[in-house]
Image 1 (cartoon, rainbow, N blue to C red):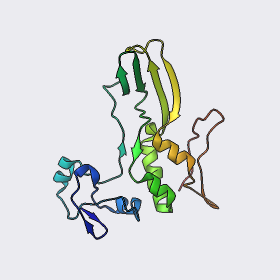
Image 2: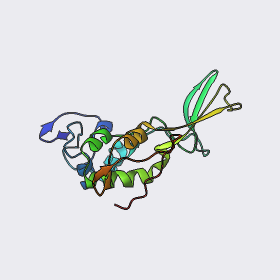
Image 3: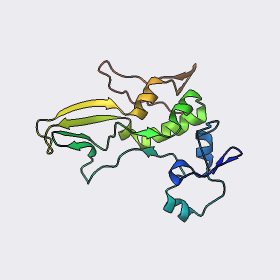
Length: 176
């Protein structure tokens, strides 16, 4: 596995296949590792080595769109509509700290595709069937980072996203 000119042994979940998009996203990030030699696409798939940006998030359980967060006696919690409050994106903090127009475009495209992982509802109940439940709306870890830092191209450089008084996200609708 290659990090600039450095070689090391890494597991498939720690590396990416070098593509133009991923090279732009991880540009300058010393934590990013790419495979050293080209692999056949079928092997990349079998090893789950990403060829594009992908979130690290829990999957939904069944067809109902619930993400099981906690499931123990007397404490049950789930994300609604495929929302995972622990959703992350590799290299996000570095990309936000070193934002460029290209990285902003990649992030915008990614967030549009995975908007269900930015902000959503978490339902909590003492009961496994979620009777007498409580719902809280919140940003995911990934959404919080994007909301706190200036990364949206603006006339004066970059600006932050906006939220309403009650903390709800305002969807960014700027054409890049």
